[in-house]
Length: 249
Image 1 (cartoon, helix red, strand yellow):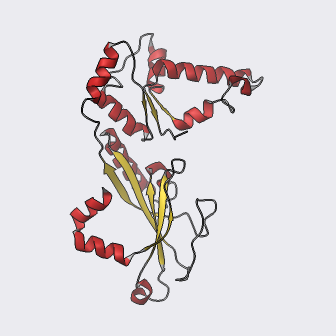
Image 2: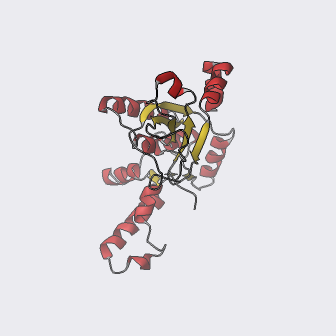
Image 3: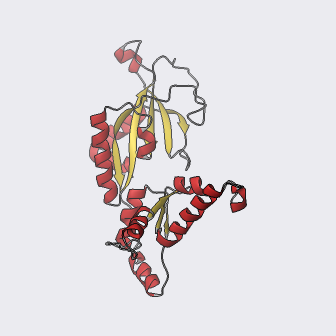
């Protein structure tokens, strides 16, 4: 979809020329844990055009905005604008990718790239330049909202589990009726606050509160931890309608 958009905006000739002029020489594929992917491209002709000090390679990082931004050197004002744009796009139910790049000076043209993640690559993995956000829309399939309504009428609840960002997931959940447009919870302000807090729960929160071995007995004699875990899961059962940023088992 991104490539098709580039061809529409830039034209086929320029898009193809850019791809040919920056051949890919290395890749770290996307995975559900890191939530980003990286490619390294040879800057064909850069040394001849810009002098011997021009970098031979450029790294391009693409993935979840909160992960990619963590590797970027961004002025506070720029970060604030990016986060405002991100919030606006996700509130529309769009899936948003962040793009960043980093020239890699000091590496010879025959440099051999290695590594599978931040901890074991043999080149610098910080100080990326933020290049922008790309929003993709994948609207719910026809009939999904009607199905959610029928399930509710039958006395059951629909719970959504997704890898999307919490804000995107909640916007989509509202669109199809998994989350009520005007959520309310009986029982006073405390219960309403709990309903709002636990409406969307992330995979990171689940990992924090899950017993180490998947069994309450693994909490040992820590009564406080056991009570906190029990309350967390009780709140999830009562109020959670969306589990977001959840990775496959």
